[in-house]
Image (tube, rainbow, N blue to C red; front, side):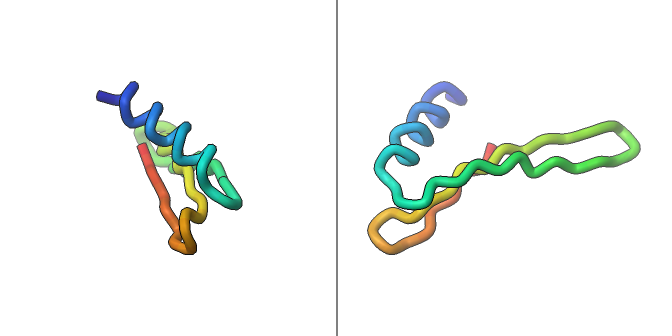
Length: 51
């Protein structure tokens, strides 16, 4: 399922304006947690996909 989401995100970035990639790092007592975010504009709307 994650492979499909990654594929959709890659094609979405290719089709959008102003693509951006963020890592969303969180530091806590259990260590570091990373949640990647891909965002951009498609047809005037901002779209973001986080993992």
